[in-house]
Picture 1: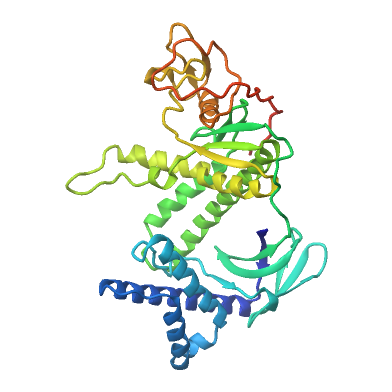
Picture 2: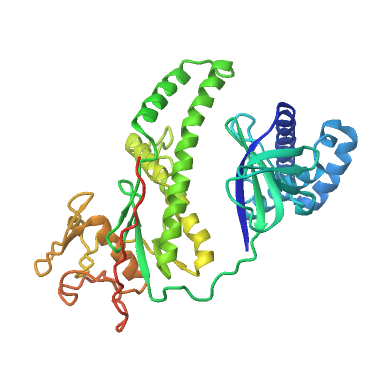
Length: 416
């Protein structure tokens, strides 16, 4: 199957300047082609990749700066734009801003890319018109190269290879019959139905304090000045480390959950809609905007969508089925008796069933994770009598004869 390998690249001054020019050309082609597509849509017509690629070839005769960069990178930019417009619509695709978009371009022909290993820690790749690029050999390629992508993150360049590792998804998981439900939260990143809590601090106290000071400095700088660019670079450096920790945490957790469970159940959460701005309009201003902003920051900080993507990627190698269920009432329903009421959840962490015949008490996130697993039709161990006080809003019970899942040992997640 196809998978990615990403490495830190070390470019010399000439290569870095040339890579910036390639990224600028790709950005210009993207914005020009997008504006052309929108102009056609205003007239009720349609523009796609084929005529735009033909016009790009004609534009190279008039503009030398388009000829200086690899042509396949520009053609790949048009292909990516065509795919984005077909998937999201012409009016929903965003412009690539010079100040906000990081340079990125792809070499689609893997046969023209040569990779050599220089030692235990170093390797190099030969890219069209760029030449040999040294990179940190942090992991083996493990397959045939299909394409290569150069991208800049802050002041660092990275090279990513799309490789075919010849692996196939197993038809059956190594541990059939195992299943786990996951509740994603803002206090704890992920809580499983087995009672395990997976979380870590993605930002240190010192980094948070430095970031606040940099935000204050940014507010006092003039737009377009060098000081403003310098402050933004320092802010991006801190947030880059935070993002790397979040990615590492999600990949670490996803690999262990998929290796130990044949079924992983998640809530079908629309993270993009949940983190939408509550600012409103001048006529109807938003309510509790500051609180909503804090909630959005907490949701994005825990990497809910990143964990979902990591689980889907890791499941390809283990044969794990990733199931999504309706998130309605999972945090308010008692897993033991099925009573759904707002008073069941006394606080963020405390869950006590208000049914006089039940009285089930548990951690609120663990109770929600068990409800998530039950919603997918899997039985889980729970306290209390399941026949007492059924709620009219309760979902159907798990099928009879499904054995209770054995609890696995806790998965340790490193903390800072």
